[in-house]
Structure formats: structure tokens, C-alpha cells
Image 1 (cartoon, helix red, strand yellow):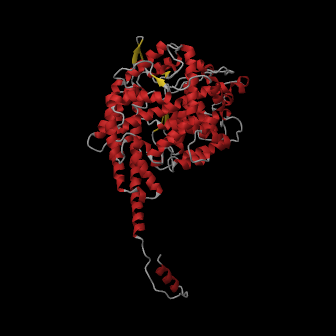
Image 2 (cartoon, rainbow, N blue to C red):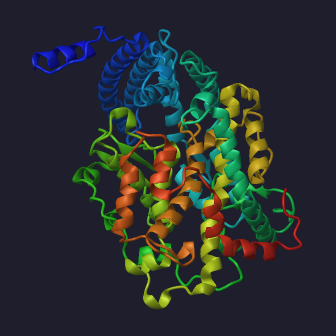
Amino acid sequence: MSKLMKSVSAAALGLMLVSCTPYQERVDPAAVAAEELAIEARSFLGRVETELAAMNREAAQAYWNQATNITPETNAAAAEAGAKATKLVVSLANESKQFDIARLPPDLARKIQILRGGITIPAPSREGAAEELAKLTTDLDAAYGTGKFEYKGKMLTVDDASTIIETSRDPNVTRAVWEGWHSISPPMKDNYAKMVTLANEGAVELGYPSLDQMWLSGYDMPPAEMEAEVQRLWGQVEPLYKELHCYTRTKLNQKYGNAVQPATGPIRADLLGNMWAQQWSSIYDIVQPATAPLTYDVTTRLVEQGYTPIKMVETAEAFFVSLGLDPLPDTFWERSMIVRPEGREVQCHASAWDLDDEEDVRIKMCTEVNSEDFYTVHHELGHNYYQRAYKDQDFLYKNGAHDGFHEAIGDFISLSITPEYFKQIGLIAEGEMPGPDADTALLMQTALDKIAFLPFALTVDGWRWGVLSGETTPENYNQAWWDLRLKNQGVVAPGPRPADAFDPGAKYHIPGNTPYLRYFLSFIMQFQFHKAACEQAGWEGPLHHCSIYGNKEVGQRFNAMLEAGASQPWPDTLEKFTGTREMDGSAIIEYFDPLIVYLKEENEGQACGW
């Protein structure tokens, strides 16, 4: 209501008014234009979210069908759905260019930024490009999922090969199997290079210099700042990794001798108990410290107590329920793929799915009864509980605060899988609880997974950023891969690589086009979450003894963090749970402090480094 209208109203009521010159309230044209722009953008985004939600449900089902039953028909259906989804997202992202986000309210600007950067492999909008790109990505994924090689007259899958790498202590066997699995990826190389070219064209069309910059733009800061942030975090934990590398190399040298594993220099990748040398816990028997040993083996106990894959998942669910979260819906148990089915090809790489952005959450695993998969099911259910928590957010906010949050949630829970937790669920008895003198052994087991992984996580996307930026050309794909693995991890291939080798393709996340920085960030943040949760619980002992199992107060704050989804900048979400707005690796150093002391003592006099 204008001032004149107010005066007229008052006069009509018989009030005494001071005489003044009537005037019309001035209207700010810029404010009116901004309001009109916001109304237009809000209407546009409403349409966007409706269309994307419908398409996401359709595409998710096609991808699920293909991942759990790989056939020419499901491959074709997934490719068709992928092309259709890519076309829609690219079209809507290009349409959003009509809006200058600098002139929009923060919530609308955030949604448009998410829309523009929300597709991992964008296709150009030109005719036929989306279909071509979808076929390339589907074929790459299927090539990995159906990969097999012959060894001693038998065709081995990645599961078969990984078991051998984990359990064999014959370096001739581990080398043969390692080289066998890496023989499945050279046929991927040409398709991968074509995909990179198309996806970069799509990224440029969306306004990014290249696809690597598009990926790095999803962290609420400029890409260059995010790269610097990653290096800062790595600098906090790199000294611990170098101590672990030095110690492990010495133990492998003592086991195999100089001819197999020299006492200095890098470590042979196939000797570390993992196909990709990313986690080393399978060689604990070789590197176990000369301190009090653990009195139990988790895999043995699971088998002895009759655990099945289903019971392992039920146990993981029970952990989340103990925090006050709701049980999983019946459809989870009806529709998940928890074990490898007989009679069909499937993609066994463990993953968590949300097929309708509401309640249809599932996992896809070829679960086996062992310690590794016991932890993995907790990790995957972390994704599912995150998905359920933010289901009431707007569609574009139905995601993690950033992708590292999504990966960190389940692993944060796994840090509470302590001896005390094992006692609480009846896996070990009171008399088998390890004493303080077993701390080094406990921490060594954890470090072989958590600390050994960090430089590998840096390497995967470090290599990919070079490829996506054009700095690394196809003829240098493999050399660049091993240059980074040597620089970051201090590992080398077990022997010379063939001229046509495409070893990055032997790691699922490369042909599967899953960004990997999220895993590095998650391995930092899970310890940060763990420390914050233990402080909330009033824990006063060493961090590695703390378990939040059964603590509903922590669970309430935990769920509040999950419910926010991607609705606000990640520092806001991080602060809600941890009290700080910065990712921080110091919790890792605190957690492993007793082990650091031990490693430095053991490494004294060694020529550490490579």
C-alpha cells in the first residue's frame, strides 16, 4: 500500500492529518526485474525437477536391470535410457543459461549450479551424440562386468582373481593372476578415448573449460581452490602413509627376499593382497606387529556362528536402528541383490541404489561371509540411510552435501565396529576382549585399509583429471597411470607392461565413470565425523576404542545432518555435526597416534621413501 493510500484511509477514518504534498511511491526498476527473474527461474526449476524426477525413476530401473542381469537386451535398454536421460539433462542445463545466477536468490542459484554440474558424463546436444555416448558408456561398463581371463585352464572373474591375490603367498601366482585380470582392459581403450572426447565437448557446451573442471566445480568453491584443498588434506596424512609404506616394504622384503621385493624403492603391486594395491589388510599375516596379537579373527567367527550374507546385512541394519533410525523397508529385502545369482552375468561391484527417490532403496553385492564384506555392508547401508533421510528434499537437493559425505557416512559407522561392538553383538566373548597391549595390532589392521587407500584415491582422479583436461593423450594413458602410482603410492607393476596395456580400465571406477575424489574425501571425513560423534557421546578414551552403537542422542544429530542433503553449502552441513566448517585430517593422526609411534621405532635406520 502506498503512502498516499495510507493517508486517504486515515482521512476517511476522521483522523487529523498533517498537510503534505501527495506523491506516488517510487518503484526501483532493478528490484522489480530481479523479482520477475526469480519468479521465472522458480517456475523453470519446478518444471526441471518434475521432469528429472520422472526420468530418474525410469533410468534407474533400466540401469538396475542391466547391472543385475547383463545381456545384449539389458545393455541396449540401459544405453537407450542413458541417452534419453543425458539428452534431457543437457537440454535443461543449456536452457538454464538464460538465468544469470549472480542475480538470483541463493536457493535458486544453488539449484541451477547443481543442474549444470549434475551430470557426470555430459553429451553434446548435437544430433546422435547422446546415443553414441550412452552406447560407449554402457559398453565400457559391460566390458568390465563380464571380464574374464584364463588361468590354469579355468576362466576367472574379478572375484576369483581377487581371492587369489588376497590369499596366495606365491609371487609367481600373484603376478600371473594380476597380469591376467589386467588383460581384460586393453579393448576398452579406444572406446574410453572416444567417450572422453564426446564428454569434453558436452562439458564445454555447458560452459566449462573441460570435464575435469566440471567435476571439480561441485564443491561450493572454485575448482582451483578445491584442488589446493585436496593437497592440503593429503599433506596432513602423507607422513603417516610413508611410515606405513616403509614398514610394509621391510616386512615384504623379509618374506620374499631382494629378488622379489627389494628392501628399498617402490613395492610390487601384486604383493599387497589387493588387485589394485588400494587396501592391504589381506597381508596382515605378513606385516603383523611383534606386539600382543588379536585373540580372534572376524572372518572365522562369522563362519563359526553361522552368519550368512543376509544375516550380515541384517546386522548392519541393526547398527543404524540402534541409533534411532527406522528399519529398512520390506522392499529392500525383496529387491536387493545380496549374493551373486546363478545363471546370469552381473556387475558384482558393491553399490547402493535409490530407484524412486523415496523408499525403494537397495544394495547390489556379491556378498561373501568374511570380514571385508562385513564392513562393506555397513558402508553400503550408509548410502541407503542417507538416501532415505533426504527423501523429502526437493529433487535437486536429493544428494549428499558433497559426494565425499555420501561415501563417508557408512565408513564412519564402520569405525564403531570395535571389539566392544563385537562383544555386544555376541561375536566374541568377554574373555576374548583384547587388552591395551593389542592396540598396535588393532590399529595396524585399520591402517592397512584406511591409510593405504588414501594415495590410491588421489591417483585415480589425478590420472583422470589429466585425461579429461587433454594433458594426457591416449598413447600416454598407461604411462601416466604408472607415473602417478609411483609418485603417490610408491608401487610398481610386477613386470613390464605390454605396449597396448590400459591398466586404469582394470579398476571398475574408470570404465564405470565414477568420480573417485569422493573416496579420498570420505576417508578423511569419516574420522572427523567419528571424533565429533565420540565427543557428543562423552567418550574420554582413545578414539580407536570408541563405539557409538546404541547411542540415540548421537543418532539424532547424525540423522539431522543426513536430512539436509544438498540443500545448503557443505560447510554448513559439516558444522551442524562437527562444529567446524573445514575438512580436517587431524582426527586421523589422533586416531592412529599409538601406531605412528610404533612405526617410527620400527623404521629407524631404514631408507624410507622411494
